[in-house]
Length: 569
Picture 1 (tube, rainbow, N blue to C red):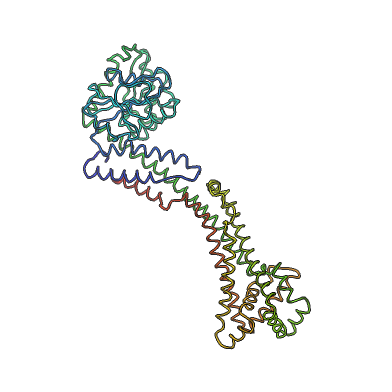
Picture 2 (picture 1 turned 135 degrees about the vertical axis):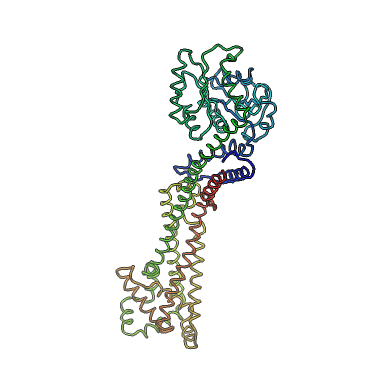
């Protein structure tokens, strides 16, 4: 239970400290629908832990902190001054009043408030207040008029038109052991105060209500109605202190009007058990609320990770499709179009050539051998056309993948945000052409290596030497691509001739099974190199995602930290 000291208190302090660190590590970089609410919840969690839970768990015997809050013009400062018996906080004549909150404490309790134990984000100032005080500091006022063991803060208006005032009022109320909520007979049903009172109820915070400026003949009716409203919000046990409409004396309420509230606060401060009960109730309520707020942060963290995974998956899918497209194009004859067909036709001619193919392969093989050995220019041109075709195919599909991934990201949460930050993703990488040229050269080297490695005996080696390694490498490239599935019309016949002549020639050198293996390996090695190139292109997208996707699974860390807090209570 919160409030226990010794080993249990140390364990709880360690647990809430770990939870605070886990929450602090969480960010919501992607602008998802849940991000704004999660950021707000995270800030509130950190403030609750820093301003109340951690300092209270660390110092269970510290004075009770009561925060006087309420709407604009409710009489908060006048009430605090009247409790003390002199002006210690400056009532606002003009609205809104922007000033430092004032913490009134017994001189013996100064050590509890002079340092950053509570409200560490507010600087400490002392001395007489003035109208130029801003909301970024906490003014400390020691006085014997406050019972030791109790401190009272006069907070800014909860409905101030100045955002800094509203934020500070919420921060102070979240740091309180006891809320003293001041309202008036004319404004006790206003919406804004009840938002905070509902929050107090949800937190299980200790609350007292001061009903100010009530006409004598309306006390019973208004008090009864207010009590009914409090019960509806789960605050039925909150005491109500009524202050009837009275003239002020030197800016203070008549002493008899504040006597009951002053006596009740003194009794709380002077009775260790009563004080501990208030602290225990509010602390337990704050710890209960932590779980729900942590769940909100966890859900938003999960949404961030899922969005990042979806973005990565979209890029991965785009480049996987590009690899499949290259694989299909390598197998279906697509690469035997255009320049490759032109260079091939320069050698093979037209109908007469194919009649030779049908009548006798040997004469064609002789002619092809003469072409390879005696016509290096044509062989080089054909090889260059094949290389250019491969490079163009790989480059085109890389560009299509980048556009596909970009288009997918535009339709996904967080995608437009990353594209705006990384505009280069819309195209392939700036050096992709150089890398593709190197890929094709390396693949050609793979083919030449395979041709050389097939010379396992003298006869095969002699045949390879007769045709030339480079020439056979060009033919193997042709055979690798020579399927008619993807071409039509006259191109079919040309590609068919390519397949027959090239296949028969290589079979005469290596044997039919070896040729099939060589063509398969050539295709596989090309696809492997393309996969590596596209994987490198995909890492540009992964790099963009990594800027918003931390390595740590924060959701799991948060769940464990929150569970540890509940176990330590």
